[in-house]
Each structure stands twice: as C-alpha cells, then as structure tokens.
Image 1 (tube, rainbow, N blue to C red):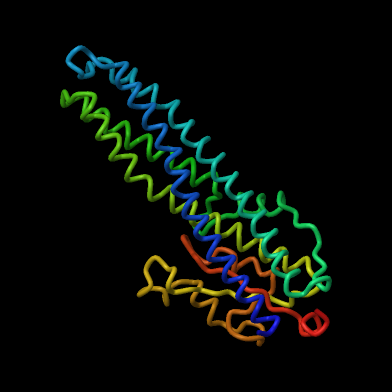
Image 2 (cartoon, helix red, strand yellow):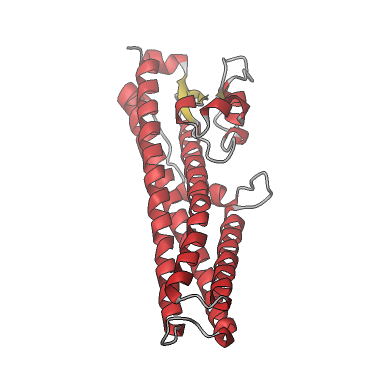
Length: 275
C-alpha cells in the first residue's frame, strides 16, 4: 500500500469514528435538555389543585416561571454544544496529526493547532440564513418555550389534569429534539472539517485536501446529487483533480446542514519520497 493510500485509509477510519461520536453527542445533548422538561413537570405539580388540575386564574403566574426556563434551555444548549465543539477540534487535531506522523514519521512537522481560534471561527460563522450559532440556539429555545406555553395554556383552559398537560409538554419537547440534534450534527462536523484543514495548513507535507461525500452516510441518499457537497466533490477547481481544494478554502467547510462530508489529505510528492 502506498503512503497516500495508507493515509487515505486512516482518514476514512477517523471520519467514521468521528461521525459515530457526533451521533452520540447529539443524543447526549438532547437527553440533557430533556432534564429541563422534568423541571417543568415539577412546576406543574406545584400548581396542581386537589383534583390535579390547574386553576385558570394562575395561568399567567405559571407561564412567567417558564420564561426563566427559556434562558436555562439556551444556556444549557450553548454550554453543551460549545464543549462538544472544543472536543471535536481537539480530536481532529490530535488524530490527523497522529495519522500524518504514522505514515511519514519525522517528515511530518506540524505546528501547534490553535483550538481557541478554530472554535471561535465555528461559533461566529454565519450560515446561509445570516445567523451565527448563538442566534440559532436562542431561536430554538424561544420556539420551544412558545410551544410549551401554548400546550400548557390549552391544557389548563380545557381543565386537563397535570398529567395530561405534562404529556402535551413532552410532545412539544419531542418535536424540538430533531432540531437540537440537527444543530449538533451540523456544527460538530464543521468543527471537525475546520480542524483537519487547519492542521493540513500548518504542515510542510500537505499540498491540498480532498472532500469525500459518502452517499451511504447521507440522510437522503437518493437526493444526494442535489447537495452542495456533491457539487464540491465533483468540481476540479485547481486542475488537481475532482474535489481537491486548498486548506485555506473556507467555502468548503459547511456545504449544507447535516453534511457528513469529510477530508483526506493530499500529500506533496517530495513528502512521500522523503517520508
């Protein structure tokens, strides 16, 4: 197996491992947010009368308590996602550095990866909607708060029991879970791709990076050819081959939401010879 082929295999394995990690993080963060739903159940119980319903006259007081829950959801999401992004960058840096050193030995001289710089890039990156990550998190927290308030108001006015209202709140939470997971499964891979690219940029052995858009990992394989990552993977921008770009090309970092594309390093010819 050639040096380049060996490195390709290692980068493929690193990506596979990382996307499994991303899915696990998405589930973990969604479960953390579910803790807040339990808090809401406790608040509902505090407002319950003897017959387990809530007095209509106390709706506004109850909903005011939910306003504090909104900020808690936003803070919890922000803290959890930022922590996961930092880990994603560190993982990309450590594992890609290890792969280069494994195939090239002492020839792979790698500068220090600035984790803070990359995390800052990910957190402040504007999406196509013009929003940064914090805006999306706050928007989701507000949407969830509104849906919970609507569910509680409706249940109280109908004279439902706290148990029935709690079920309505759970439905509102469940509808938001996929959006929480979507944010995680979008932002962590971006952090991973940026980390890989920045490591390549800091070496004296990486000439370029190649975007790999695995159809098998796509959420909708039959529509994959419409995705931006497919277009990028089939474009020969620099005459070096399809899907090959420079590590400095920031436009390839975030092809589309939930993108599972990843990068391989393209080594310099002299690095392979001297490795």
